[in-house]
Length: 207
Image (cartoon, rainbow, N blue to C red):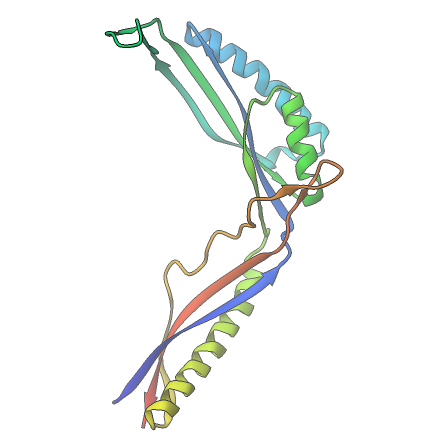
């Protein structure tokens, strides 16, 4: 059985309905307890500010927590030996916050910073339910594969037959995110639109 194999791509343009905000606190002190106490106090205030903004507790998750000891190396002179200065403990606590009203993303970041957040790792826009869009993208990918196969069959002077196999290309679904958002008037972000795409590999019989 002679065959022809092609890869089709389907892309769906969608408007994001969810924002992911990463905020938190970090502190350095001579002892773990001092650094932890400072961060814990900041996190209580940040949590309270997020709740004030209408964020549900289930949409606030710890994404990173670390405690480590660090030393600073200081040169004694411009060109001299390096000596180790006294170090300290650094404690970091980061939250991943889901904002279900994308227009409030900027206000949520501002509220967290005002409450004591000194770590802000950007805003990512996505969709709450990707499955509703995946079907559309797959349909477009299959149509694209058929068009590619028909064109190649015509160029090769053969007749396109039935589909023999179909497989979705692993890793074809990218994380649905917008380019780095920019601030707009009123303290918010402009989420733009998302391109959610998938690829399918299709093998057709040829005659």
